[in-house]
Length: 246
Image (cartoon, rainbow, N blue to C red):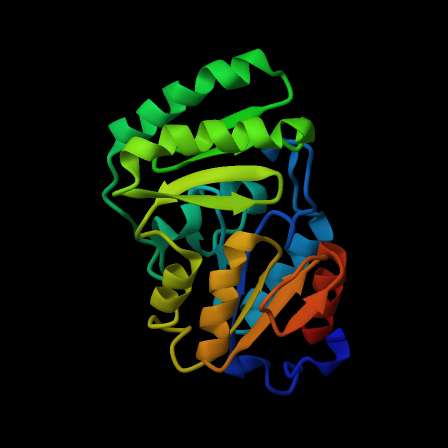
């Protein structure tokens, strides 16, 4: 649907809580995670939106909260990190799931030989989860999928595969963006509002679903099949629309 049909306007903005994925949604997709950056104009828009909506704004990302903060510094927002395995509410306190760190370390060790043999692969050890990126080696998708599934096999009771854009992640079974959104929406100043969630990837589909079930708004950024109700073509287009709301 075109963005002009979105139900959120300046007149009703305080009835919504705003929740955003980061990479591919606020920050353009980069060749490697450490190269990602949120444009200065987008960061300024987030600051204005945070003030206008009374603080009901959160970032819900596959990145750890420490990286979310780094990309949005100096501002610090409510956040769901590592697909909801970490959560920071309005009081600033941070909680995280109990995860078998040795199991994550074992899966990282299992995947290291593959990444050492292929320079185009990037392995992220996030402590509570891991991600193997193949954006710079797309021809290796089949090999990456086989290796990640093999590494995961002994740990499927506690971890699950999360496919994404040119990346395969292994995350705790209990972690989801939908869960993070649901928990945040129970907290003030989010409580009593309708959620607006914007994301760009497969991991965001659960977030779109929970936003719709709560009567809110779901926005897919970019191309691809989705269960989101609305679509924005690029992170820049999303930021420009948000700026109009402020």
